[in-house]
Length: 366
Image (cartoon, rainbow, N blue to C red; front, top):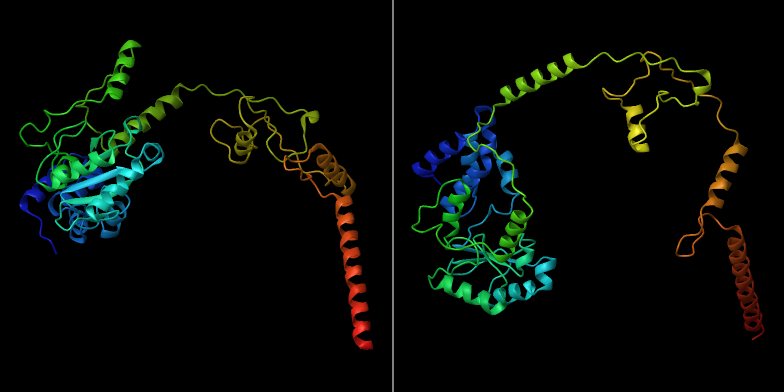
């Protein structure tokens, strides 16, 4: 059982303090990164630690830790090398990059080299299709990689070097990256001084400037309201809306000729709603939908069921209105084809039976 350091416990309290008291469970994701920063993965001890400081049970913590792929459930190397093998990168050579690295390192997916330096994994998507094929090392990007370039990167890492990513800061270990993902600044000298945006990213920025597209302004210091405050604000807004709402006039009484024979409320729905929405509203009315006992609303009763001949006529009309499908199959049963197949089968059976009778008679004579 791992005993976490006092520094980790202090940081855990700092993470929890970022959230309102009644929303402390929201601190679970950064806390999982924090325990991974100390052990290199989320161990059973890490799950128990998170459950303890948040007042949860271990099953709740484990459910989150096993859902997200960034939380590792076994010891991981100093450098997590992820190669995208999804459609776009695969077409551009991503699978070849992964296969070359697997053979060069002697490991497969989610396996670590004997020296504990490299853990290799294939990723379904790294969200950088315009730079493919891409590879990340501890989530920093190497764009447009080829097999030889990828081998050069891992060899430099195993030799103690720190190759420069295409975009982002200079590489750090997975544990150091987990501290950043937990919400703490990278204290390394020059940690954020290197790297730069890619050309595709800059292209998007230039287009936004050209067309005057900007993100809406916001105050990053805006406090997060507690659940009680949010509920109180919602109740006040609802009360104001109800007070401002004028009473709706009574609907006129339905005329006898408007009765349709349906058990649904005899209320005309807006034309911009789909039939599915209209049906749902009549079965499960909301605040804006008239209900059966509303003033002026008449609910008709069911009439006599249709006669059998009427149902048969309707079925025949439906079959006639449906053209055969594209594969040549009829929309309904085709009696002529069935009778023809039956006659052919009977003829074949009769011929086979006659042949068997002749053979039997010949055998008996012998």
